[in-house]
Picture: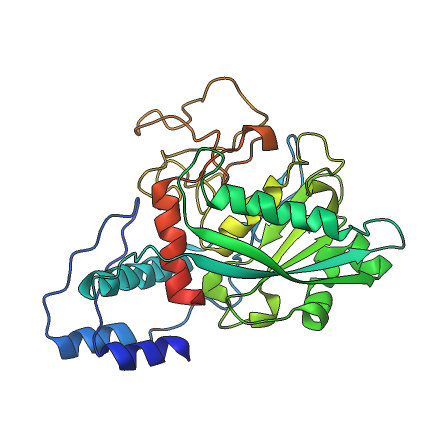
Length: 326
């Protein structure tokens, strides 16, 4: 396992505590190097498997229930401990963020029913450009220094998979998915009239690698036919989950937005998702600092309203990458 190998090479480790409601810098442990090594490399009970870990994006006014959109408190707590360990290990080695680019190969798997949903390669290349622009801060947000490049495209004609990807997800992922934990597999299909996409989280890869990836509505690609959601930002949003980000309105939507939030220090607490593209940001958590992040890629606004990741989100993605996918 990669992480064990890193422990053997580093010869050190850390002990950290979860920081809830909002993530704070954990103090550097003062124990001996041997104690650090034991704390960092000894595995705890793995509570990641089969958690309701997926995240989803839905259209304005949707009534559909997001598939597994909530992350349990038990899993979230262990994840934060692991990310804190990764941060502390980086600080001890003075490589907390070395500034190197993260290069992610992308496999697109186009599910279609004859001509319906048979997305052309040109549209997929446009989607790669949108991902690059978003994650490099070209829309106005922070540059996370994450680069995407197209590795492979498959086209699969299967009416059942295309029309009901939620039901057949395990089947088509088992057959089509390629690459390891650092390869992004994106599947396009018809997700219906309300759901736009969903994704797995990085900490779930170890227990269920075949399920890893992102599924998006084929009409949400750049130039698609879904009104307000055809600029390619559904993929940007879902890839954010794949890289370790929660929604801006909480890891348990509808319940913990104001109290826990997304565990990123520079995104204001937010109780509910943004609908549409309001001219002025609301303040759904008036007792906390800041107004709702209506332009953040991890909210639910219209594509034209989404423009940014914050520095804190970029740092979280890079930390999660090193911990779970590097």
